[in-house]
Image (cartoon, rainbow, N blue to C red):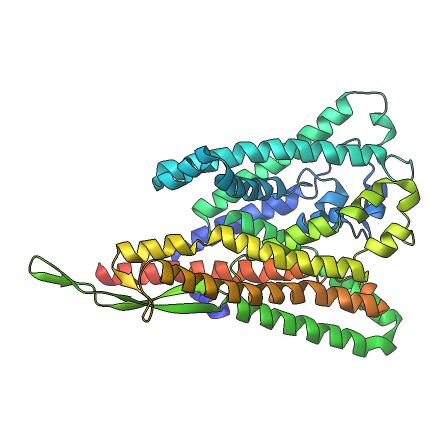
Length: 434
């Protein structure tokens, strides 16, 4: 990876893209330090420390901007939610399905326009919800400053600031995609998660100095984290290749076809989305309890039964991950459509007739690899919870090794490096041809 970055830096065009991407990332980190007025950030940070609800996940995805009440507190979550919702609605709404099947640049622009408008609407709702949370506070104490009491300016400024920050991040992500390297939205999410790492390591070193006899526990945690990272890299790059053979056909005096290729099917086809959906749903009871004063205590029966270290939470979490893995792979990959496309182009899978037998075989393979991918995602997500359940040292270490964060960071890093290598390879061929 370091050699690839070194070689890419020597190419002027790619160097400009890397500099532009780093400049946009710097602006994002500077914006994370700009807080919204009328909010007591000290009380808010205390509330978010150790928060095990869905708000804790959103805080992690925003790079701690949520607990600081910065203008980028919503991060790019509204855009991500809008993208997922629009993608799911294309199955239920014929108009969206027609736009998606139009293809070409015009159809792509229409879908992007619908996603942007949806992201603005979702950002407005999330901004208002966050204001309600700040206004209600914890145990009856509001997180608003005294200057915000009795004025309509405070809610207007807070909600519009969150919406403007989210919209600006959406624009910055699109600029990185167009003028930088990799997917801009993924890069911003990557930076948000990685930005929490230095403070976590600092907290770990402080606790290690305070209790030096537990050094071996921290060493085991480090080895376990590295093992999980290796597993993620292996599975992310793994795919099931189904052999495809194209029949020969004569057109005029030329013969076409006859070549062999393969149909690649990713083992983890759904990415990190099943974990995000499952964690959001499994955290609903604890999130509701956070708004009820008598249930908000960590030792209340709601947090004991439905907390993120309880056995019930882990079982529900596991089942939801498996369910959403199958659900998303069914939406993303259609065996009947793939079989029809192969038949139209004269392709077939050796040993299976074109049409229904081919689609049934592809469906069978899809079911098997989806089960493996679902179990893999469940292991990545639940192992850190199990460690926290049995080890108070891991629970109090200050390092959040959530499966969602690790998979996102590694997946974005691998995808960005692939795009960087592809651009270098394309430039190499272009120079050779010229």
